[in-house]
Length: 473
Ligand SMILES: Nc1ncnc2c1ncn2[C@@H]1O[C@H](COP(=O)(O)OP(=O)(O)O)[C@@H](O)[C@H]1O
Ligand SMILES: O=C(CO)[C@@H](O)[C@H](O)COP(=O)(O)O
Image 1 (tube, rainbow, N blue to C red):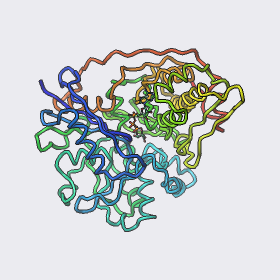
Image 2 (image 1 turned 135 degrees about the vertical axis):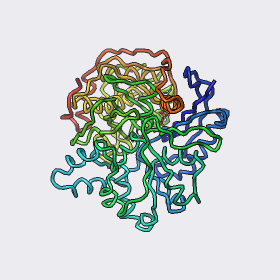
Image 3 (image 1 turned 90 degrees about the vertical axis):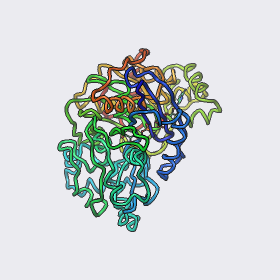
Image 4 (image 1 turned 90 degrees about the horizontal axis):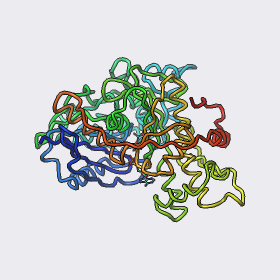
């Protein structure tokens, strides 16, 4: 039996699944925590990968491995291959002004220019904005930066035996895939090429960049001989994990809240709401991402002194609309809509509705409403949502499943709880090994259908100050 491994190096943790390449059966799995914070030494990801792999029984017997990972994180390497400074993650907002400047420097129609050139209007999350921040605030570090890569590229490179001391030859071995390259802001989904002019404009010089591998192209081998697949951004890997096709909209509720679809054509949304990413198969992945999702539930559970199943129980005990309580979940600023300085807020409090149960429900509905704004932005581009698939750590919560279904006014498909990103990476590893996408049997999924509650989204949008966002359709 040939085994393949899939890795998810996500914001909060590293997960490893080992599957039978032929059938997709889960053989072993493991996970390990990442440090908190929006600035992280990549070495912590490497340590977590080794811990998670050991918990999964090791990688020595796998024939191929692929890494899916949190997108956009800026990993700068010097000419020896050492990390220049801790990585700035996708949810670090210090680069917000740099992003605004990149848009305004492109002229009065700067947003249109960026959408057409890179697929995406830069916000703080986009790697190009982080490089501009580095050049302006840490010029010595910018000057020392000989190569720039992303979290999944860096871990794939470490798996191939490269690291500090690898030098120019090591840097030349860096590799990525088109889904993660498309989140950098210096790669064109239209041409499939990097944009050196953006690197000059942001970092001040053109560093070594990872080679962009084809969907089934191996980037090297581990010292034990396993093929290393191209890997993917975590959302593109999740699309592989749930075998999303045209007509499916995937909603992921992890640290980020994302809404994305697999499409045959690329998008270029100058409103900036929808990022025009590529997927891991040769198609495209229009996507909205929020900064505030599962952690809003974590914070609300901590405030109420309950665990996450306890928060779900409380929320299930409240009516739709939480008795009028509305939580706008912009706890860490927000990316969609682009409000990096925003804070969260609680609206509609009365003596009658101010209960733990309503607060738990309002947290679930607030997250669901911000995702509904994402769905509205995606469907406003003409992308159909024939099926909504809910994934991510918080998809385990029945209360969240119901809140998403009632706010969206749609049935929601919930696959069996699992590690969809790592599963997608494992599927890619099997494809790299055999030369074709495997026809793995997908596990059973449930369909959750709650009574539609359109007034919840309307009241949320008033409270959030976004009453003119596109309507849900
Ligand atoms: N039973 C549950 N109910 C609600 N949320 C849950 C539950 N189990 C896990 N989670 C959420 O899952 C989140 C982690 O999701 P995950 O997709 O692994 O995040 P990331 O990919 O960003 O690291 C935690 O913040 C936690 O809130
Ligand atoms: O920034 C984005 C997508 O553009 C995020 O989706 C990150 O990719 C982090 O993902 P999670 O760790 O929340 O899954």
